[in-house]
Length: 78
Image (tube, rainbow, N blue to C red):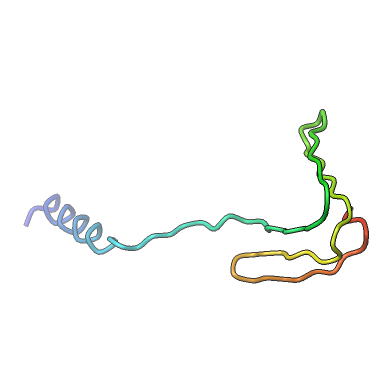
């Protein structure tokens, strides 16, 4: 058998065998839910967003993937 034909058949077999294998990267980071009364979002000159929430409820929920964490915090989150 010709070496090119053998390598081509091997490559085709390899491609067919990888059907259905999906590798995805999960986004890193956290999702935090904070409840309170009136809020505002301001953007600084540096491009940073400042979020102000009045009368914050002293608990927030932090989600990381399938895990949930209930966190008790003080009056100020900063």
